[in-house]
Image: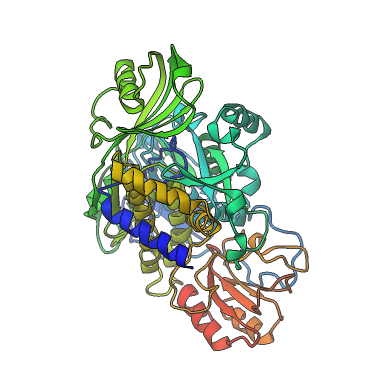
Length: 637
């Protein structure tokens, strides 16, 4: 405990010393999320729009051209387990009628972009449509994941992407590899995506071939990650310190390329009925108390809600007037693929130098950090001559670069939005926070935003959310983002090229090579210690739900694939069953014992997989009812 206290104090001190940074696991990681999401409004009749009727929907362009499509059932829950004890007593709501609703329940579009959605992409049987605008040249997972979450709640979703072609060599090996943390892997598992995101054999072979020469693959001890390029090792990690984490299909970390992740999420989104339009970028928004009007190219979208996931330079954030504050960069980072005339002059692995830090993987993959205040990031074209100059300056070795195949730059600029919502406009992903890509946590942080926001926004649109449910998105996710940003700043403080920093690095290196130290850093980097402050002292509340292995052969994670709330009752308590019936269309009640209960008799789990209430042997039914009302609204009966 003394060591952990020392580590925590040390990291806090490092964070306060740093002017700016990002956190991540791989020096080659780089993410820029640029997306926006819109949910169309109720309204009275008007020229153009999309109206819901019992079994049909109408999309009308601004030139009054109409396209009609027959309504279809809601999207299926993927990979739903076949064995169900007392399963999901609720049934889907019938289609809702919205009398007088002739306004834009789907985006208003110009005639040039109007098209009929395929019959396999139906409008929802209930809820309001949602439009998602993407302005992302490099990665799209946050917006796509959010779109899937909203479609799972039977909302119509439109994705608008500024780029005509989302493909990029930076999303493939060697620079496209990302590390997924435990919360992200659990989110994919709980939505039936785990098998899909597992890289196919051919990609695994490519990854294995690409990493064979990686310095960490040559080590006798396997690293579990790093902090400021200081590795912690798997054989030092004491997983018994995490008593509420049960073994299951979702592990603590996973490697995946951005290209593969985006392909999987895009396929899932389209299969669920998400419409994706490319070549549209948000140019303006006008918000009122009831709706948001979005201009994108020649198209105009009128919507009840808009969610901007459009990157660190978010247009949506700027137009919404949300402040973005933080620390400016200390360095320019480079990820380059080059041909060297004298490749053996550089030592493989990570190296601190008098002017920065570099990582070299033969024969020509280099990631380097040049402490120049971020002077060369996006300010001018990066030439072969410039790369050679930086390699020589940072490494201190006179190497010759004969060819430049691929290059990207990044910085440790660290900023966070002061609010994640202004009226009907919300932010997620890099639009809400940016930091250095030194460990890949930006992707995980953004996907965590999407998982947290999706069900809350859906409940708000349906009208069955508690008054402050949507506000909890900020109160839960903003502290998580701030913690990641400080973790990143601490890494930059430890990387500065100075004698005092090198002395401090030696101390951290000693601490991280202990069992307590490695366990502490693994908990932070892997995300297994994530816990929201939900105002309940029970140690399970606010944590990711353990993947209870039920005696009927199913697991808790499998029961969350339909995106509903879950009351898991190990004792088949009749009073808990009766309580669940009051929220029968929102809460799935499951009575089944578990092989390891972890000392609880029942748990109430939110759609994002986090525990809202946990009961001991003598469950407090009043507390369970209060938790249900807080998170899932007033009972229907």
